[in-house]
Length: 356
Figure (cartoon, rainbow, N blue to C red):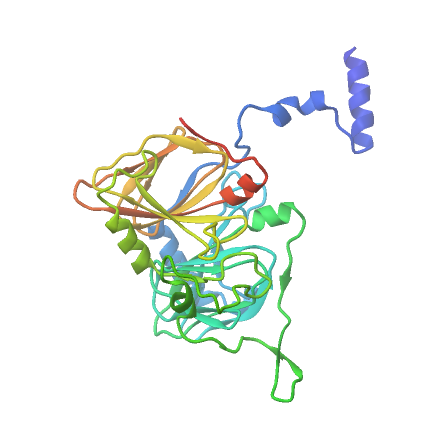
């Protein structure tokens, strides 16, 4: 019988086939997470490396100067979780990256430096520490630094998801009309909207302008491209005396002001406050998550792994892994920023959440 099985297997391999019995544990395994592992990237290691990168790697080497958070369990080394790509970009004073767009939803989350900006569909979005900048799929955008020191931000894209669906595409041929109406190729966009357009039009909760076209470019995401950290932190602190979530403390989601949904079709963004000494209960979701610490120090237990974090440290939680957070200080608050692929999971009716 073993000889027959071996013959069947050999014939299958020769014809690019495989029997389920050969890989049944891989296909029907009880564990949701396959390959990816919880992992933390420390800022005290990353920052000096980013400094070396800024001095020795030019923008021409890869259009954008980026260090990717490569998950040790990933088959594709530019994947941080099965659906999320997490990286750090650094721009020196006076530098610009060419205008482009892509089929992935993307975001920028500022860690260090002033003077950075992203221009999106004609809106120049300035950046300060903790600000969230959204570049939904299909929106033209370019980056730059008008400050006097390097600026570093976190990029989070749904690139692994889009790649696995075989629809990843980047476009760099951008045109604007000149005074004669001719299409002219441009490296950067013309700023065509007033300063702080997102905040001016959408920055007042409960009010939505009825005279504005909320469709921006080819985006199906939020027309509000900038979410200020000062506003997010103030909102968290207004609620600090509430009980909060037993699993996440005081937690807020950034939302599309037009419909109240997540800011992109595939990813949702959160900020949370862990009060002094606060320890949450464990839970798990079928979504994967990427985190960045803004302030404070703490630890996150992910399964049997303990990740101790401080300011600017980043870590990921793979799909289905139980996790809980602790603020290690008895006097100082801790603030975490996070991104998950929950909207994609919910659309596919694959999202589940439970206490662990």
